[in-house]
Length: 361
Image (cartoon, rainbow, N blue to C red; front, side, top):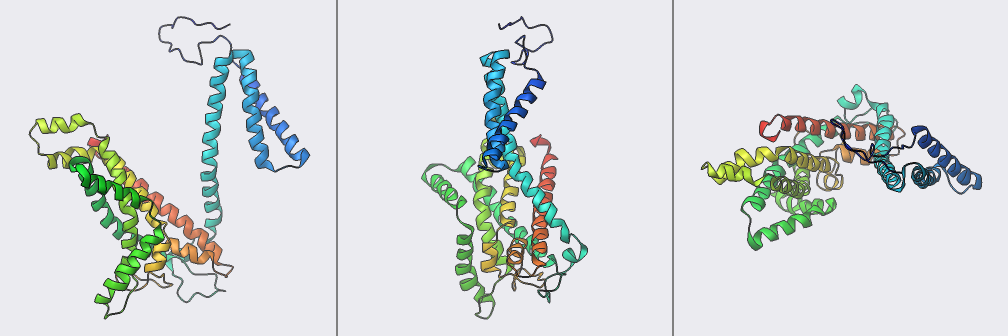
């Protein structure tokens, strides 16, 4: 029998305290143990699967058994609430497991070459039987290519989003938004082919005595093409979330629109804009096909992004993963870990800088 009491002073009534009977924690644990034991006995006893099927069936058995046990103690309404809560927790764990698996794999296999030689040398003059060699040239290439691409894509993307939100009206704005949406799903190899056919084969010969030239800058152009729609869409959504009264208050004080956007709208939306920019940077840093097509890759260090082949971490991982040398997989895993840590550091740094803005708090 349900007992609903008048809310006492200082006590907030919730679904957890409006009933007189509660399912003991020990009973909940016992239901889980029995459910997974039955699942293990069925799957392993009949030899119809492995531990993955055991976990799946155990979770199903647990949810069903929990509902019936909780119904007999708390009632059907509270039992449904408890079952749905357990289902949400299970979905959360299921979503976290792949990420945790990726992180564990990267860390466990990437630490084998975390040494000074890996970060201080390149692959120049490194043979198949040489255990040394590092990714210094790839780290330099990634920083330069992604940095130049960010300098090109972020201002254009933010200005484009400002136009769409603050000024854009009619068919032209709708056309721009449509093409931005189309570009969001463009394959990276298409961007690489576009820069290859336009910049490498047509434009670069003008500066190289008629000969096409690979370069890190060409890779930056391809990465900028991929980053631009992400920056535009994320910035547009963040600008739309800025409350209208902030703009109206600024206009009421006689502040022109361009200054309102610069001093009020952008600072308020800055944390979300930074998040979108870092998502675009993360995508650009992990792209392989454009770099392979227009930068070519290199075993030696090249600090000049405007002349000659240049390497990147993503391309370095791809090449080392397919190398026949027994030392190549360790280099590939360490380079992958380095790339993830590099993006993580850039993201955390950008978020910390954005939080310092007083208007965005």
